[in-house]
Length: 300
Image 1: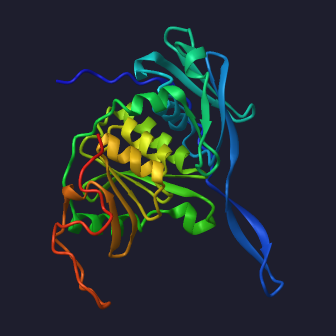
Image 2: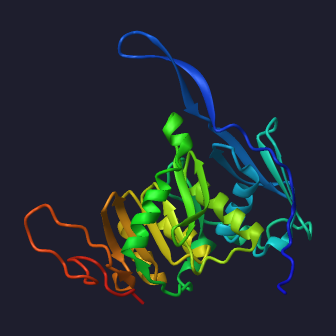
């Protein structure tokens, strides 16, 4: 029997994701519509301020926990005694079990990189350093499974369909969606899922991570920190994101909409078992063979 997972005391202070407002359409008529929420949330650890996040606010406790985990500011969930959100103060208070805040605080926070993430994310130097020592075990991805998963994911994005202005991220196992989180920034949604995984003791080695946003270096790092070997997006990739995916051995699939997708890294782990009929003129790659430009093996 596995050991019980430590679970911090936590508030339940999630906010409603959307708000009703009045807008005027192209005909000059008033329309009742919904807009996505956005609230600042300052993270404090044992009273010391770490960062202020702009968030939808639906899962602030998991967001705080996942942020500390993904930035490698806290090494184990056992170090967290309590997470309390007080929206009147726009603050989430994290209390550690040892009462000493973030260990090696000065070195970890000495260098921060402002990322290209929506809502502007922050990456600490200790996060960047750790990624070069990360290696993910490869898993096979079946094309037929990918199509089913994309169809299942299309049933989510509830806040986006109501109000727009948000990104969504999903933790997936095969075609099953274990968790789906929307937030104003994709990095916030990723951190919230990471926090959920920590709370539930979920391993990422057989999982797939989906995001509606582009696959930047930040998203690759967050996914790798969760131990997830496959990253999927309906958007594009950045050069640095692709380079890091090669270093850690992550399968990177992007531009995934309908029957179309592009494998940017890890094509050797794709199983082409549902190749669609080509409507345009031109040749077709045989099953299991990468197209031009796809990386067939990780960069070491």
